Length: 192
Image 1 (cartoon, rainbow, N blue to C red):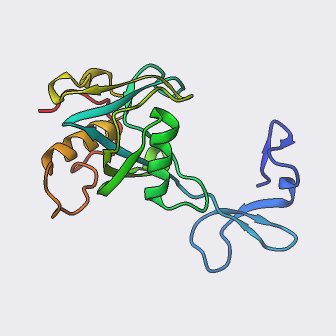
Image 2 (cartoon, one colour):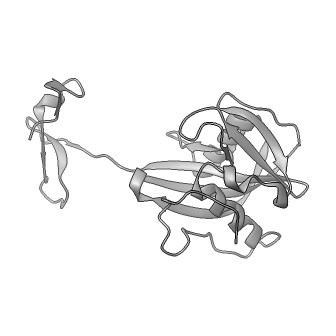
Image 3 (cartoon, rainbow, N blue to C red):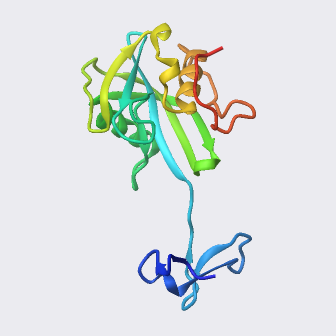
């Protein structure tokens, strides 16, 4: 089967590729018919941080889709040639103009339906000076009871905030994963 969309090649030169299981593999992939090069499609890595200042949580109201207008922690796609911690700090700068210090990996969450792995850190703000970046409508600090639980953008934001609260003040914890049986399909809501 050739990689075509409405009679046109999706990517220039892609018409020389066939979808098949390459030698030594067990999954169907796009393989170059001429040289045998395999085009691998892998999950995206999202990096971010639960950031606090004086026991208040930094949240950003999204200025982009998906979930435009909903609240999130500073997070986004990892860039090439950066560590996950560097990416989380960069996202905090880009989305909230925030200078943070990474403390520990809080959780690694798997969202298979959208092919994402999310690495979320616990971080401390070096200053309360924050402002909305290009991808945020506004940013704000929230006490635990004032977090807009019904307006959180993604289940992983809910998970990360609750996991932060679970180990608040501790340094001796293992990173969390998805709650048992939860693959991120539900919408976030107030903690139980």
